[in-house]
Image (tube, rainbow, N blue to C red; front, side, top):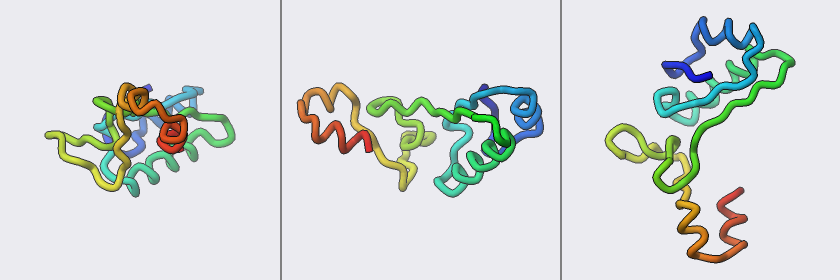
Length: 101
């Protein structure tokens, strides 16, 4: 499920308690590394011992939700990931492995 805001909402807490198994984060949910850590910790805590998938569509290239903020201003210190097309052009398994880390 997705949600609005940068903190755990009562509605989201109920959904997780009822068995929702995954949360998808969008730019509207992310302000800073510290805030993202608090949010994901709260999500995990709400799930208790049940597994909870926390995901973000951060493919690299044009889809950089952790890097590009409103107005295309960088959100430091998140890492900018090159597009997979660019990685292919470099044709280097070492570079691809490093990006994957």
